[in-house]
Structure formats: structure tokens, C-alpha cells
Image 1: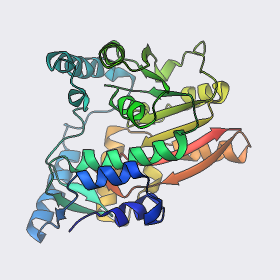
Image 2 (image 1 turned 180 degrees about the vertical axis):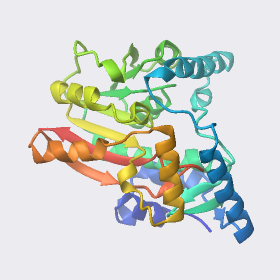
Image 3 (image 1 turned 90 degrees about the vertical axis):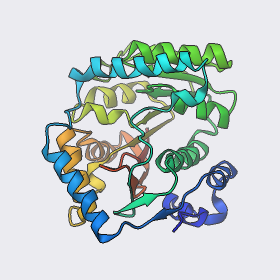
Image 4 (image 1 turned 135 degrees about the vertical axis):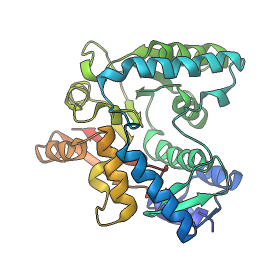
Length: 307
């Protein structure tokens, strides 16, 4: 089977002819074929997830993991330097190749080891095109290696790019990207849990988090309050959103168990909906991709703006 351009259009909520050329190019250049697991293989996948969730292996996210992320991005920084600053070395290690994936609330076996990365790149390009074409500056909070900003800078040139992270290694990596690849990109240290109210956002700016805000669990209030005060033109959050799962579906139920075991982002979408009722923000889009990695879906999009 294959996830075709028509399937991607349905995933993204547009007519097939409305897919941007950038997305079509990414779809045509990657292998999106996959197989359905046999009943035995399906049971092995499910049992493996249950055993993992019930073990001590999944660690809780939160402020206490700052040193873990410093080590993680430090390794990526070393790899980036060792590769002589090749952009391919920026792919984060949490995107693991060669694993079963989730698609339409079931498990699949991709033929392409980089299926997850390629799928994510198509969705990312779509939202960049849809919401960021008219802005002047983009801030990615929790930017990690900076590979999302590199993709944005290539897709929409002449943007001023900022990569913010609580890891000093991540900030160094972002600044190295700018130096070695001639991108207008700056690394800035930022802590989600203690948002720097002194940080000023450029006019006509966008804010993004992509698989980053998940790390704060229920403690997203400081960051939301920061954004309400700074008033960017648009906010794009691509994160695991627990409210979008269906507990009556086995794959969703297990994803939700994993989400809660890790302590991922919670209460975020309800908080935004409350702010919309209060007239403080406007939610432009909430979209579940119905796609994810072995343990959960980290690629749901929530797009909103202060009013």
C-alpha cells in the first residue's frame, strides 16, 4: 500500500490540487509505501508497546530533564561538527528510523526506513506554506538542532530566524548553522518554565513549537502567558495532543497510556479553547494527522493567534 499525494491532501484537509508544489516534490521524492502487519506481527507490536509502557524505561518529562537534553543536543552538536557541518546531521535522534509507524489509528510497516521523517517533512512544509508566507521573522521555541528552521529558511527565503532552547548546545548549533550556511539565524537561550518577559519579538513574527512543548507536561501557563503578552501574528504548535485520541481504539488507547506515562503536554488545548471563549485568542485550526511513531502521535497541529 502507499500513502499517495491524494491521501496526503486528505490528511491535511485540502483538495488534491491544493497541495503546494513543495509538498508534492517531497511526496514524489520519498517512498511512502508500507505493508499491513500480519496478525502475529500486530500482536508482537502491541505486546512490545504494553511491556515498554509498563516498564521503568519511559521517563517523565519536565524541568528535571534539562541535563538530559543538554547531553542529547551536545551529541548532535558533536556530530554536526564532525560531519563538517552537513545539514543531514541535524536530524534529531528521537526520530528513529526503521520502526513500525501509526497511520489512521492502526500500525503499519513502512518499507522506507525514513518514512516517519519524510511524512513529517511533508506536513511541516504544508503548514509553513499555509501560515508563514506573509511573516518576516520566525521564532522556534525548543528548537533543538535547528533543522526545522533550516527547512523553513530554504522554503521561504529572506526570513529572520530565531532558534530558542534551554540547551546551550542547541543555541551553539543554531549559531553555527548561520555561520556555516549563511542563514540569517540566531540562537537564544529560553526556558519554557521561566519565560523571559524581557525577550522582544520582531514585528510581523510567527512562533512555532514542533515536538518541544510536549516536554512541559501541564506547566504550559508561563509560555502561553508570554505569548499573550508578546502578541506574535501567528502561533503554530505541532505537538502530541491527548484530547484528540479515541480511547475506544486500541492504538489510540496505547498511545494515550504512553503519553501519560511520559507526562507529556496536558490541558493545553482546553486552555486555548478557554482563552478563545474569553476573547483573548482565535484558534485557526486544530488538525490531527492520524500519523505517528511506534509509541504515540507527536504530529498534531494547533494554530492560533492572540487578538
